[in-house]
Image (tube, rainbow, N blue to C red):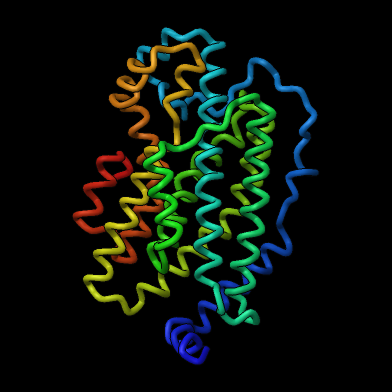
Length: 304
């Protein structure tokens, strides 16, 4: 026990505690219960999309121009639910990593209390996303079997800056998307409502993840920094490439092979991914976690 306390105090500072205390105050003042905040019984207007069309993977392609409006509505609803299911999958990984990180930590510390507050938030978010997908009548899209197994290993082995870096990647990219969805006039209210809740509460989680990464990188040597940068980039590759399941194109009555080809060549989508990753890339550069090797992965994903 004494050994753990020594490790904790050598990396933790008063400024770090202040961040956690402010986040706890924010959580006490501004948190939501999706079961009462969202009208789950309201009908879904048939013409409303699941996400802003501009965020569809096919927007800006010839195939998008050929699609009927009903196909576009169906596609965007399946795309948003695929993204939500990816969110559920990673939130389950996140909760286990945070619990492991806080194991035997000082329960009187603000860091410990906020970490458990974050886990409680993530539980509500996962239930909220699952309920939204059920309401939209979209099946549970799951990651590829190999990706799922990689996630199982990641949640068991990742720690420190690698764990919180993976958390930050997932939250930052989704945050930018959802800020647009919650303002979309032709987007389903159920998506706008879940996005509003997620944006508000995840802003605290992102601040916590950034602070945890800064703590661990404060005295990190070049080798540790390079390994962390590469590991976070690999995590980003798995998350971003898994967000939209190929089954969404079949659900919209499209040729899956052609759709995937057009998504791969879609310059509009590439630009949107770079936009959603701008703040993340700036933070990684600031903390020395954007190396030549990791940048090559981000460029392959069109995040950079």
